[in-house]
Length: 182
Image (cartoon, rainbow, N blue to C red; front, side):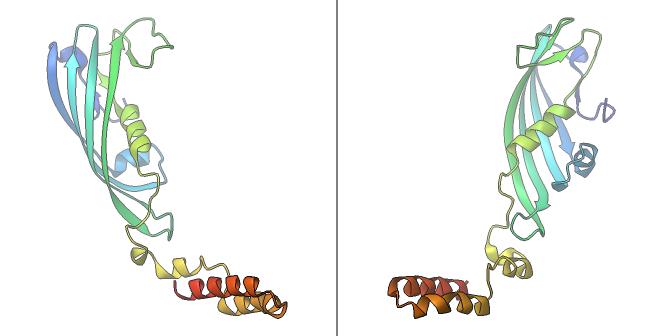
């Protein structure tokens, strides 16, 4: 077991029926899984386990927050995390690889949910990790995204303006105005 039972379901010790288990996932968890994208992690996991003789189903609710590098400015951004997931685990000597469930060997008394929790965190994490507004981003990094400086833009616009093609010059002027007002 990766975390000495910290994220385990003691399925052999549970009576048949519904049980509630709570877990906390933290920075140590992300570091163990070598997740360089996740800088900090504070997630509470609430698990509702429906145990039967040779299987159990788990409904998980994860909520908390995670800190990532902002996709725009690379500064830390802490974002809320909320996810619901479900899995089924069965006890068997002969797991069926065709079934998309978790398998438990009959001699195991606990089921370690660490891998499943990490998969849920990665799957339901934000696809875009950015500050809620552009103003919260590091202004120096945002300034680096300018494609050309004002001087370079003037040099690019000069040949088009002298060609007498008013459409091209107008389009370049609109682009210049747009860049200056960002």
